[in-house]
Image (cartoon, rainbow, N blue to C red; front, side, top):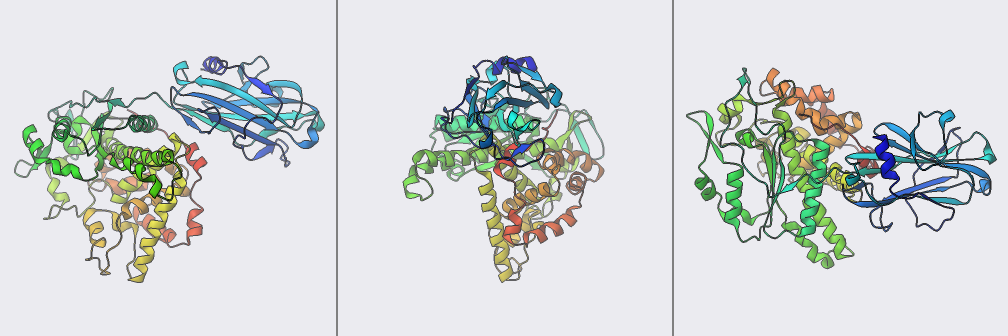
Length: 576
């Protein structure tokens, strides 16, 4: 791989310019020295796909980019002799640029330190073009992040080295893997299980070795929006992994052929209903599926996703209406937008974010069913044969079905914001997290006025959630909706703050641990998986988090990561 890096970075001539004529690049803070002394030196770096008009940290597989850096030396070192250094951290290995223009592995020892530009007369600033108009993906570098560090020394202070304390981080995304228009069923019904125990039935599916990942569009969907959705989903898949087929349906509700769309959905996800007498889910005939999905159902905005037990033999999927995008046409009437392009980006980002959110729901359940040691998917027998026991007489869920609603929606919203920020550094996730915090705080404050104590536990399951959001709430006042989203999201923020390793739990491990814990503790796997993953019982967490939500806003905001920290966060994806 190091030879490949040399090839890529030598595609463009590295140019040293001793002037300050280059447009201002983002600063790489804080500047540091090997002695620990303070310094007035500054380091700058940026990666751009539009010749420096804007800078980003994440780029598409086939996107041509420039990478420029600049070293600004201390004023007292002007016109002294010194050396300039460029380092790259890639795949946990440091590379150092040498005078020939190539890169060598560096062992982090000063004895083996080599200058990219040795014995130069130091000027006020030195601008260096690292890469000019290069697409990394087609040349063999993708699905990776490089960290570029800068340093220099001066004969004015022998033995001292000045360097950028933080790197210029450049992520090259994997190739566009969200195929278009490839929806298809794999099975008309569940295959025969390969084995079973007292809790699960286990299955091998034909699609396990290479599950499809598909985005299907219906009606008029602008090309730029379609491209954004496919790229955001491809990025999310690369980060999260994919255990089962996924079909995302993106719908313009103004489409003419609504019947054709409904038929495609019924073909891809053959509808099933629970037969009480036979105690199993049965396939609904295609004609009846189409008949029951009346076109009027398409009049309202749609958003949903998952990989539920009743149709998992064909994987998971989502359904998202894209019509909110067209609100950009009203940008002149909206105070927050100065241009049409800014409005287009905002609403396009929102649709793509919803797409990622719904994909995460499918990801949650794919992980929940998968048993790594067996390399098989296990579906709880109780869900297949005794589904009514999870509901009351009104067919409402009066207990936790898979996992608490606040985990289901809170982790999906958290993940969508995090992944969109990593995909596009201009997404602005932190501000959106703060909006959700304020919504949660407003609900808690309103509750205090009517002696309604708002707790995260209130958002575990359907009947409890619907009760507090209705006029039957014991306080007599209905709470504002979406508590499972905003409080759930901030529960994830709090978990991450408690332990950096909890990000892995939020994104993958809590759901991955579910199958094993469900097998050990039938119908309570969600509770035991929480304690196993986050090292705290869920009841103790409720107490701790509710106390956190009672704190002043200024204290709460302190635990929220910066956009840069969101962008740099790492976790391991699901593995087959």
